[in-house]
Image 1: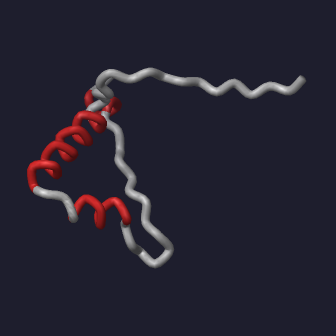
Image 2: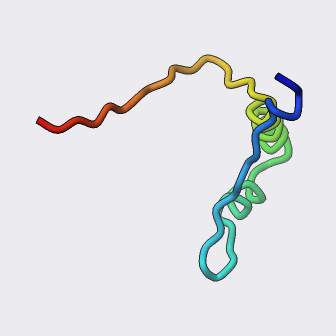
Image 3: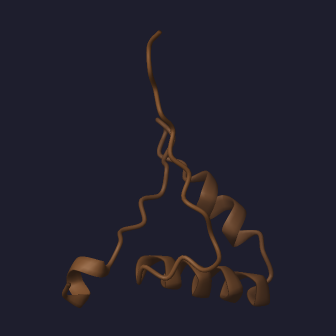
Length: 62
């Protein structure tokens, strides 16, 4: 798998009036916290999810 195929895209939610609640929250943080979050998001984009579990939902009908 090429590096480009591994990369993920982060899409930020925008309200109907164009506000981005994530950016509003993020911009209210101190620089150290912003840096930690930016680094974590970069790892997610690179496909490095850290310690996590995958959950699958199974739907069925009786």
